Length: 302
Image 1: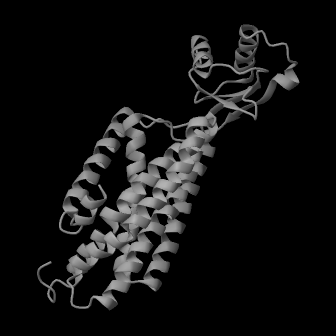
Image 2 (image 1 turned 120 degrees about the horizontal axis):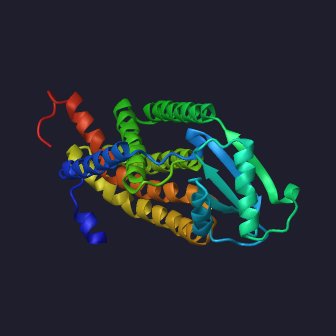
Image 3 (image 1 turned 90 degrees about the vertical axis):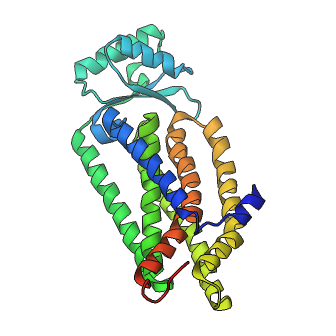
């Protein structure tokens, strides 16, 4: 595998990477829009109930129980001992409906805990909160993109900055496509993971850009496509090892962690894989295309 990547012509075969990314993104987003993205309560609004069960309960079993009572929602465990459960539903339940469901759960699981300890939280989340979260997430991504754009322009050049931002857009769309394809719930940890992945991905890209800049000084007579291929190969071991180390830290937490942390770790893991792919196969080849679009009259051929 290592030898195969060392012999791979990243610039010459960049269109294969572009086509693969476009196919995955279009398929995932199309399925997501047709079927509908699985938006969590954080975005749609609804009801959240947190109960201290005094025991570990099967989440799927509890989901089936509340579904039998006409309430479709998700159940996640919480607390250090996993004895608390958080029930989230996109249906707005009034106080009477919530108490009716809570009493049914108490009877089903024969819970003897007093109400003030049994009911840890019971709230209604309005859709306006979800709208505010979406706006703030877009603002955060916009501010991050502008900051990265300015930094890369100062450190490298504007073509590098545009290519890097397009690669970051690719990473975000890849994550959305994955969630649309597999109908995974999108909630606030997803936004946090996207912001984390954006920073992670741009770091890998800058490492490659750094090597390209160094090689431009050392390999003045080498054509740009060969220089980029060499730069990617020289930094590949570092990029892949960094990603594998990150994945090695995430996977045990994902396997052994509770539902709440998995909601953050899953998009983070997807983003690490997608960000590594885009840093190697998308970002610098895009710079190559932008360079030749601007300098086409002066530089012909590869």
